[in-house]
Image 1 (cartoon, rainbow, N blue to C red):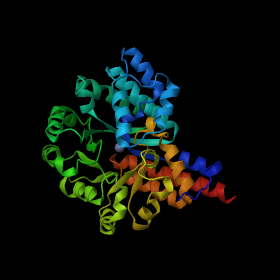
Image 2: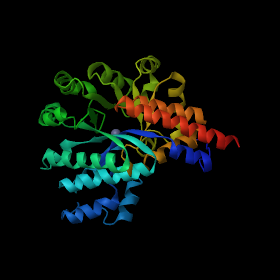
Image 3: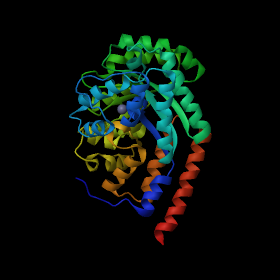
Length: 358
Ligand SMILES: [Zn+2]
């Protein structure tokens, strides 16, 4: 049920200024119609019959996905316009610019190399473009960044393993910081990818591990990701609420859930943001961050997601600062950066506590 809290004036400004970390955004999912058509033209790409032909028409189509698969079908068509290093750079940098305007301080971004390699795009082109955008974002926007490579779970795990092996040099150079697992959760449970995760853990023990679980899949997808893939973060994870023991475990082991409110509504995982178990996560002490997932497709970047949560839950400043701190502490940036962000949270709190008490 949506309660309906207003999010305007000081509280909106507070959410805007609150230092935000994003842990769950697919760079390919930031490809909006405004960038898709120019890239298609630049690369002489034509779309399948029946595909919208204008920005407006495509935006309209993006407003009504029937399910995850319908969205993924559009997502993969969208990816086809990404050909050159400059395209990957433009894609990532335009996301960083948008997110910085939303008050983003730190961003851990996903990318799906298999979706490009299977189209004949060399993996170096993809990674070089994204890496250059990360460097420019750090330098010019002051955002810290991490690249997380995801495996597409609808492809065989042997393909995933080959993909991991093909980016060895980038793990060594520290250009890629983590491994994730995305695309349709069912019927591809985490155990199918145990070989990929164990290979990486053995060869690059410092690489961080995460996986999408508990969005479509039940709590066993979450616990099997923790037990078999040895992940330290869960992307989505909202179905953990169905298993009390799992909730206690997530809290005890300080596992961060990267939740994506507007995405969940758009893909009809829930009817509205108010149905998400966000208040229960807080009650159980389960850490989570609020993320945009595929913002170009789901109608909102990170601040829109914060606002949507506020409109449904009406949290006070203390609760919002707790969410911000948990999100910072669950990040994979260094301690110095965490401290900078934590201090900034305190400052924002002090400023708005005064403003709101007047
Ligand atoms: Zn996702």
